[in-house]
Length: 136
Image (cartoon, rainbow, N blue to C red; front, side, top):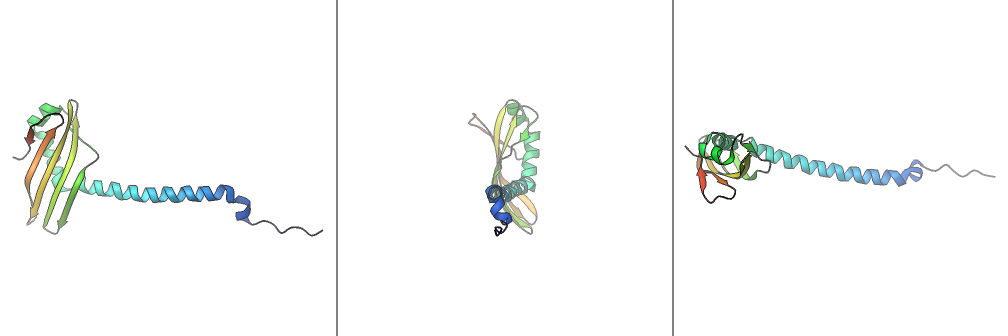
Protein backbone atom coordinates (compact mmCIF):
# COMPACT_ATOMS: atom_id res chain seq x y z
CA UNK A 1 0.00 0.00 0.00
CA UNK A 2 1.59 3.32 -1.05
CA UNK A 3 2.22 5.97 1.58
CA UNK A 4 0.65 9.41 1.23
CA UNK A 5 3.24 12.13 0.58
CA UNK A 6 4.13 14.08 3.73
CA UNK A 7 2.23 17.33 4.23
CA UNK A 8 4.08 20.60 3.79
CA UNK A 9 4.93 22.76 6.77
CA UNK A 10 2.29 25.34 5.76
CA UNK A 11 -0.50 22.79 5.45
CA UNK A 12 0.30 21.48 8.94
CA UNK A 13 0.65 24.92 10.64
CA UNK A 14 -1.51 27.43 8.77
CA UNK A 15 -4.19 27.58 11.47
CA UNK A 16 -1.90 29.30 13.96
CA UNK A 17 0.58 30.89 11.55
CA UNK A 18 -1.90 32.97 9.51
CA UNK A 19 -3.35 34.84 12.55
CA UNK A 20 0.14 35.41 13.97
CA UNK A 21 1.34 36.89 10.68
CA UNK A 22 -1.79 39.07 10.41
CA UNK A 23 -1.51 40.40 13.95
CA UNK A 24 2.23 40.98 13.50
CA UNK A 25 1.60 42.98 10.34
CA UNK A 26 -1.02 45.16 12.02
CA UNK A 27 1.30 45.72 15.02
CA UNK A 28 4.16 46.68 12.71
CA UNK A 29 2.04 49.23 10.85
CA UNK A 30 0.65 50.66 14.11
CA UNK A 31 4.18 50.92 15.52
CA UNK A 32 5.34 52.78 12.42
CA UNK A 33 2.55 55.35 12.72
CA UNK A 34 3.14 55.70 16.48
CA UNK A 35 6.82 56.36 15.82
CA UNK A 36 5.98 59.14 13.34
CA UNK A 37 3.40 60.59 15.76
CA UNK A 38 5.85 60.75 18.67
CA UNK A 39 8.64 62.07 16.46
CA UNK A 40 6.51 65.01 15.27
CA UNK A 41 5.40 65.91 18.82
CA UNK A 42 8.99 65.55 19.99
CA UNK A 43 10.25 67.92 17.31
CA UNK A 44 7.72 70.60 18.22
CA UNK A 45 8.31 70.21 21.97
CA UNK A 46 12.09 70.40 21.53
CA UNK A 47 11.96 73.52 19.35
CA UNK A 48 13.33 76.83 20.58
CA UNK A 49 9.90 78.55 20.69
CA UNK A 50 8.41 75.71 22.78
CA UNK A 51 11.34 75.77 25.21
CA UNK A 52 11.09 79.55 25.50
CA UNK A 53 7.33 79.37 26.09
CA UNK A 54 7.76 76.80 28.86
CA UNK A 55 10.55 78.82 30.48
CA UNK A 56 8.35 81.93 30.48
CA UNK A 57 5.39 79.95 31.84
CA UNK A 58 7.39 78.49 34.71
CA UNK A 59 8.70 81.91 35.76
CA UNK A 60 5.45 83.86 35.31
CA UNK A 61 4.18 84.98 38.74
CA UNK A 62 0.59 85.28 37.43
CA UNK A 63 0.54 81.79 35.93
CA UNK A 64 2.22 80.28 38.98
CA UNK A 65 -0.45 81.89 41.19
CA UNK A 66 -3.24 80.45 39.01
CA UNK A 67 -1.85 76.93 38.52
CA UNK A 68 0.41 76.47 41.52
CA UNK A 69 3.83 74.87 41.30
CA UNK A 70 5.27 72.87 39.75
CA UNK A 71 3.92 73.70 36.31
CA UNK A 72 4.20 70.70 34.02
CA UNK A 73 4.03 70.46 30.25
CA UNK A 74 1.26 68.36 28.75
CA UNK A 75 1.67 65.78 26.03
CA UNK A 76 -0.56 66.84 23.14
CA UNK A 77 1.13 69.85 21.59
CA UNK A 78 -0.92 70.99 18.61
CA UNK A 79 0.01 73.28 15.77
CA UNK A 80 2.94 73.58 13.42
CA UNK A 81 6.48 74.84 13.12
CA UNK A 82 8.44 75.44 9.96
CA UNK A 83 12.08 76.48 9.66
CA UNK A 84 14.44 76.97 6.80
CA UNK A 85 17.99 78.03 7.62
CA UNK A 86 17.69 81.34 9.52
CA UNK A 87 13.98 81.95 8.94
CA UNK A 88 10.78 80.24 9.94
CA UNK A 89 7.40 80.43 11.62
CA UNK A 90 5.64 78.72 14.50
CA UNK A 91 2.04 78.58 15.64
CA UNK A 92 1.14 76.03 18.30
CA UNK A 93 -0.54 75.41 21.65
CA UNK A 94 1.03 73.72 24.66
CA UNK A 95 -1.19 72.33 27.43
CA UNK A 96 0.22 72.90 30.92
CA UNK A 97 -0.98 71.95 34.37
CA UNK A 98 -0.29 72.56 38.00
CA UNK A 99 -1.78 71.46 41.31
CA UNK A 100 -4.53 74.11 41.13
CA UNK A 101 -5.57 73.80 37.48
CA UNK A 102 -4.74 73.61 33.80
CA UNK A 103 -3.97 76.14 31.09
CA UNK A 104 -3.07 76.38 27.45
CA UNK A 105 -0.08 78.38 26.16
CA UNK A 106 -0.52 79.82 22.68
CA UNK A 107 2.63 80.68 20.74
CA UNK A 108 2.93 82.54 17.46
CA UNK A 109 6.41 83.48 16.32
CA UNK A 110 8.45 84.29 13.25
CA UNK A 111 12.15 83.62 12.85
CA UNK A 112 14.19 86.18 10.96
CA UNK A 113 18.00 86.24 10.72
CA UNK A 114 18.13 83.39 13.22
CA UNK A 115 16.14 85.24 15.92
CA UNK A 116 12.62 84.27 17.02
CA UNK A 117 10.20 87.20 17.46
CA UNK A 118 7.00 86.39 19.35
CA UNK A 119 3.82 88.10 18.23
CA UNK A 120 1.77 86.01 20.69
CA UNK A 121 2.97 84.26 23.81
CA UNK A 122 0.05 83.96 26.19
CA UNK A 123 -1.57 81.53 28.57
CA UNK A 124 -5.28 80.95 28.99
CA UNK A 125 -6.23 79.33 32.28
CA UNK A 126 -9.14 76.92 31.85
CA UNK A 127 -12.32 78.44 33.27
CA UNK A 128 -10.96 82.02 33.26
CA UNK A 129 -11.71 84.58 30.55
CA UNK A 130 -8.49 86.61 30.89
CA UNK A 131 -5.24 85.78 29.11
CA UNK A 132 -1.84 86.04 30.76
CA UNK A 133 0.78 87.67 28.54
CA UNK A 134 4.08 85.81 28.94
CA UNK A 135 6.17 88.17 26.81
CA UNK A 136 8.63 90.44 28.65
